[in-house]
Image (cartoon, rainbow, N blue to C red):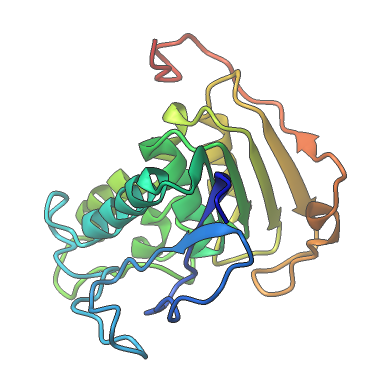
Length: 235
């Protein structure tokens, strides 16, 4: 179509996930992010690296840095298209939910939707508290590696998020623990709206998303409000 339309960025769940070949989108504009390297012509994917563990001992060369750069690049690409009206929405589930928070911290997105939001408190996996995520290499100090990976925690990007968020997660999710997600929510600027849908009995793969998928409003979680410096609000 000749009209300018909003765009959506879809962030992937865990695993070596490859976007399929482009398909007609019926007038919609969207892009699917690949964060693990490899050539998009290879289907299924042939990844160049293990993005969760390669160079995990060094914050600056850790491969998750590449993955996060892919997020920003996809935003820049789709916003530059002549079909884009400048509204860029981002969404994802599991790892994709955490990546959506990171994206919103790196670029001025229009809205964020996330389910079963993984990656929050990514250091807990290294320390053995959660079931999914990067692992401490044999012979390395887990506390040292945890300090490397926590640099990439979505909570560290939350203070830059201005877009409204709509998040859904379960209290029995041991891959994406609610405590970590609340840490990210608590780091949001006080003016950023965050609607939350909590399934009290939901796990990572048993999450009830019915209310989240409807037009019903979510719960606004009370957040701790310190000074601007405490919350790292960019003035």
